[in-house]
Length: 314
Image (cartoon, rainbow, N blue to C red; front, side):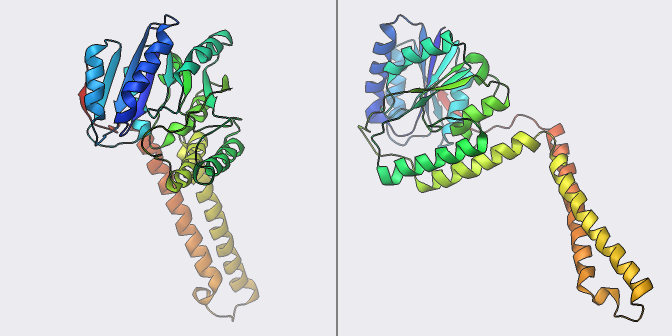
């Protein structure tokens, strides 16, 4: 199997047939051996019925149905797990990504022996105020913080070597940061390619201000986990040590001051420095405990079930 096309979707019943026809037409002309995997992320329209119908008519088409809406990252995780191709393409189900770009991306990733290529929708047909400007701000922040120079982290059209997607974990809302996750795992041969962007033909966008804010929070979380995720004691232990040093410093100062310089002064427990010392030492101990708990959780971590599949096609 050369290619696996993974398509997470939610309430895209009007687009599915047209997208399926577009993909098969684009790939058949180049004689690829491929599969198409639709992941229905708990749609409440008839998206699943259409996917099931297409899978019955076409052996290359498969479907996964979630019991409810678990999110795009979980849908991608399920699709990656089922994919069998040497190269995996992801794209959105709203017809805004052009399947005609796939052949060019496959040629580039093979010729340059890259780990992944991320699409760049240089010319967009979305709302300037509510999507384009927030997207530019988000991508700028992601470039600065992650150190990976991509113009369009959010682009759904990407291609990966099989080894990449089989060795990364996509969870929460981290799908937009797959290039960052891949780089953290040593897959650093990353490039971007300008791709066509289509105006939304059916339905309405699912992008909102909450996704912009959540995206920035997810980026901070990802970078924290990159540095301290495997050894949380390195972070919490450092903070705990600093707190304890401050606390013990104030304690020694209060003791020396009372014994040798101000013996007739008020009681140590009546001075504000005493409470600063007490608070910092308690906080230092709590940071150490948090570090120990983090180490225990990591050492005993097991695969967590993040979504529930209610049905699959053959």
